[in-house]
Length: 218
Image (cartoon, rainbow, N blue to C red; front, top):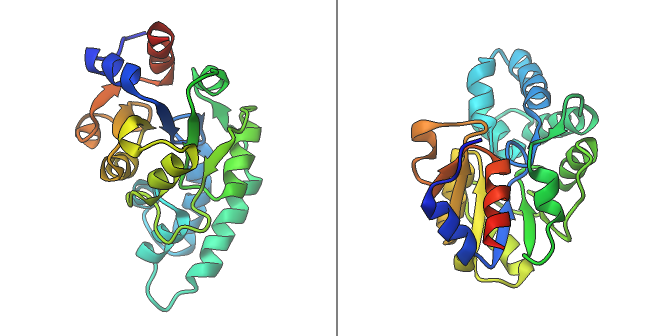
C-alpha cells in the first residue's frame, strides 16, 4: 500500500473535523450506478458512458435536467432513477478503510453526499456501515456539488468552521465543492486520477491509506 504525500499527513493533523463523501469514497456503488444510469441512457437514446461521466458526484435531479430537454418530465425521471437505485444495491460494498474511519472516536465526522437521504441509507446498509450522527444529503438543498452548499451545511451541523475541516472526495465535482466551501480537500484515486484530481490539496490512493495516516497522527 502506498503512503500519502507528506502534506496529506500535515493536513490531517491540522483538521478539526472530516467531511466525507459516500460513493467512491466510503462505498463502491459503481455497478449499481451504472445499471441505473445505463437504463436511463437507453430510454433516452444517450451514450451510457457520457451519462455516467456527467452524473458522477452530482445529485441525480441536476444531471437529469442537464441531459434532457426543457419539455421533459424531469421530476418523474429523477423519481424513477431514485427508485431504481434505492432498490438495487447488489454489489454495493464498503471500500477498504471505510468501517475503521467511521468507527474512530474523537474527531467529528459528517457524511456529505449527492445521494438522497433514502439512497444514502440504503447504500450504507448494503455495505454494512454505520451512519454517523451528521449525514448531509441532496434533500432540501437547492444546489448540490459542485456547489459548496453541501459541505458548508456539513461543517455547520458539526459546529466547526469549514476552513478547519478536511474534505475526503473522489470526484471532480466534490473537489470543486470542497474548495469552494473553503475546506481543505484530499482526493482519493478510487474513481478518477491524474488531471481530474489536480485541484485537490493532496491526493492519495484510497481510504485505507488515509486511515493509516489518521492512526499515525492520533
